[in-house]
Image: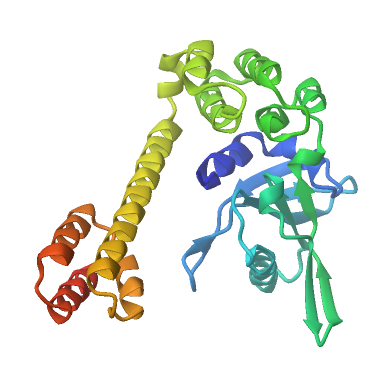
Length: 288
């Protein structure tokens, strides 16, 4: 599951609690913003306006990474360049926060030609699994407490204590969102039904994030189902028409509506010739 929206919400609610993880001087978090890049319609995860111990203001871009993406280092570098061009008199720094080891693609943009590194740009990274869950829980910082299930030595007890800490410490308007976010990260340690019983269904349902996460899960199930149907269609065509062009598989990947894929699977069995079937596949793909 992608975690972009919950993590942006966590940053907005508890940005000050996250500053100790980022390795830059600070005394005060002044503001948390989300900025849209007009050229690509992408959004920066979070951009913090921070005041240093000596009173200097600077911008700190956070990029949360909850899936493996070979382009993430370039993306953060692009964000820094885009913001820096528009605020050339204000320091702009960035941190990439990896949620799990399988998403980690490093912390340097190395440009290698013929085996020689000709340019190298370091990117400041935080790897949450290198932090201790119990220490985060003991810190009393809600932002770190909610992230504790992603840290080293996390377990069911840590999760349950984290939930109780949110209930004790978080302002009432923030409790629902923080508990939903904690529940997302707690899935490896606490079953969803147990977590709901632990904190109360009514409280969780008060969060707008619940609707977002339910819609996301539904979309993921639909994508998995469509992928299964695509493979079934490809197998049916290969069995009946071994001479089918290889490019047809790419066309099938563009068809995601289950009803269209069902219809084409039947057509793959009943259509008398390959040309007619290819035409039907093309029409379905063009209708997307």
